[in-house]
Image 1: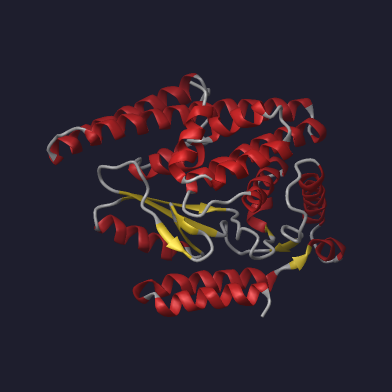
Image 2 (image 1 turned 135 degrees about the vertical axis):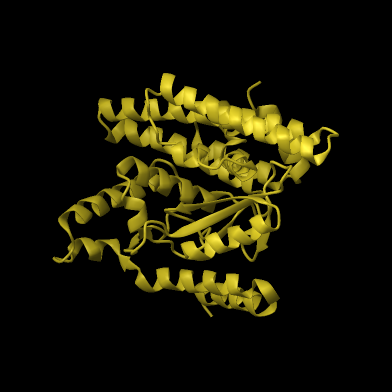
Length: 349
């Protein structure tokens, strides 16, 4: 049995033996099979006279980005992102994040291959919203949002999706570099480590890509977007720390609820001020701040908390990616408490 068959068979076995979780596994299997079935080699899509010329140009640039990922970033040279799938929806999956009422740590779910992760993905928006609703009924704070790309960690040859290319060259390049980074290093059960590493590779890769392939105006626009992103992350993680401190205090639940409501009201006000004064009305993060709760704080931490440590590690290695990847693999082999301490020592004070 080939690798695809083995992976699908393993998922099917998990579905058959998982009781009430079986519907989740079956939808995941069905969604993955749909992507595999619809794949077309990018070179054939480009050569097809019926393909829209704009899409042809975009996919030709994607091929260049994929080659750049291999030659310049030393990311895996395989068949991932050499095929294309057109989807009839804006996102490929919708991810649900949950946190307890008085916690900023995400709830975790465990699966074959990926291990325990801090989100649960659905190929159908309605299914994701129904699952988030059940969690909310059980007292969890929840967040459900669409994702334009995802990685199977090299188990399958992941395709480029129509949802990925709709955002422009910078966006699709960042997605390619991020998702391929998961094939370099992945630690089961440590979502924050995995996502923060991939974000660090995405940043370094996109910066190098822009240096060779973008105009000065495009590089300036990217730099401005990174400043906004840093200010957004600093704001959210600062409030996450404040919330964690509040929840640790020996207070009655009603007092914690009142403190939580006050804290999120202050966060909304600080965001409004940031948007108005520093960002001159830029509203790109408005949807994130709609209905802010613990799950929103947890989701940002998952992707950003350890990024400063990985940036510092890359700088320590003088930007040399092979040495950086080797150092990250050494960290990945450590027990989690040791790995966390090593990353804390790397992070800027």
